[in-house]
Image (cartoon, rainbow, N blue to C red; front, side, top):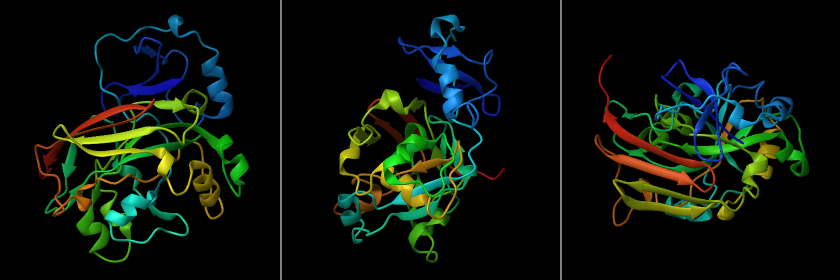
Length: 284
């Protein structure tokens, strides 16, 4: 299944994508796409529904983040060897873990605000993992049984705050609007081999990232098992799993970064596409 949330920000309704790519309204069946709905029991209930029995949504409504109720937005850094090389950092022996604040989560096509006085706003196409079953001290062999599905994430990053304002990366990762998630939560059974998905990202129509989940250093199963050793993952939590090379930081001969008016488009095989216009910060 492909599940989504659609409609104005703050008033999203739950939806299901049918075989023709149309949105079917699930609001008569469930209240939202949240922790209860993406549990194994919740997904089994939804899988039994004939999409044709649901109202078809007309037009092209806005997509919201594909899941709500997220408690933790956990990120893995330097998870592609060639991205570590372009960042002039060694290949990690264990996953590099940081947090994106949940307040940065937004729809996949919503504008992204470049922070006030930003010097180095950057892009990163990433595979998002959405937890569907509580995970604590799980083994790698069982880890994928705790995953509800997958989505596209743009791990928007401000490199100055990430690496030059102290030792913690988190500060550069969670600015408001820095977490586009969606357009869909694609259930694990529909994705199949999550370690063989093409990934891409363009800036102003020019291809910057062209990779695959095949080259991840730590697999999804390894990441979920690893995180569960020191934190409890709950349904609705999102893990974003690292980016292939081609970010602004790694551009040659010199790094370059996003400015107001730039448009970033990105996607992952089977998981859909995103589009963001980057806009200047203005005081509220």
